[in-house]
Image 1: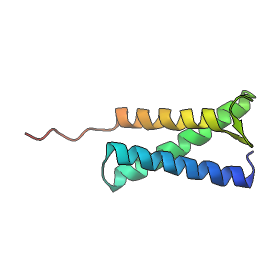
Image 2: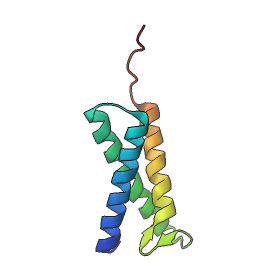
Image 3: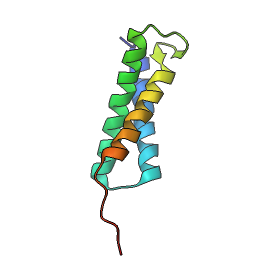
Image 4: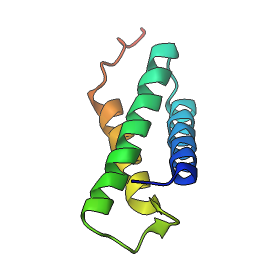
Length: 90
């Protein structure tokens, strides 16, 4: 279980990743909410996986920074690939 500062810092990083991804890829309000949710879920699942595997190489305080970032980016990429694409304009 992460400490309260690690929980706050990790949540802020997840929101930052989701916001930057949305700024890069664009979309409406629902896409922004989806990007934020995917980044948040991926971040904490990545952290949890690293914690279960007892990885020590990516720790920043109590936070598994590398695995959490990778999880967030993986979820964002998967969400972008699986999201329905709007029809192309002629």
